[in-house]
Image (cartoon, rainbow, N blue to C red; front, side, top):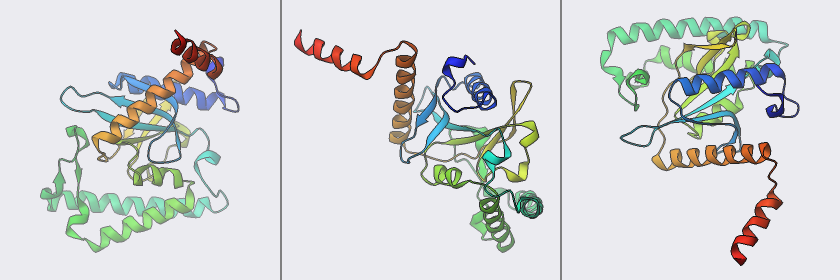
Length: 243
C-alpha cells in the first residue's frame, strides 16, 4: 500500500492487513469498500467496511477488523496463559456438543441468511443445559482474555450482517476468535478464510445507511488524495448558489 494512504500512527503490518482484507473483499464480490468507516448505530470505526450487492434485494454488509499483534488483541497479558488454556478447553467442549446436536437435532438448521453458505443452527431452541453453560463460559473467558468490547457491541448493535477478524498466521487460535466472527488469516500477503462468520440479520434501512457511510468515507479519501479541503467545498457551494 502506498505510504501516503497509511494513516498517522499506523504500523506497516496493520496497513498490509487492511490491504489484504480490501483485496479479499473485492474478490468475494464486495464491490463497494472503504477504509476507516464510521459505522451507523454505534460510535466505532471499522478498519474496512464492505457491501456486496444482490440483484433481487439490498445486499450484504460486512465489517473487517485487522489485528497485527497480541497486545492489540488481548486485554490482559498477565493472566493470558491460564485463561487461554481454559478457553481452548471450553471451545473444544462446545465444538463436540455442536457436532452431536447437529446429528441428533437436524431440524435445528435454519435458513436465516441471504446466502446459503451462512445458514446456521438454532442450538438455543432446545434449551440444552450443557450447551448453554459452555457458551456462557466461553463468552466470559473471551471477555477476560480480549479487549473485545468493540467486537461485542458491533454485533449487539447489528452494525453489519457479517464480521471478520483479520490477523497473521502467528496470531491465529480458533478458540480465541470472538463468538459470531469469522477469521481471515494472512500468509505471504494473501488471506484464507479459516472460520466462517455467522450471519446477523439487519434491516434494509440499516444496510442503506451502511452503504452511505462507505460512500462518505470514499469521498473523504478522494478529497485527501486530490487535496480538496472543506473550505474548498464551501467555496464551491457558495459559487454555485450565486450563479
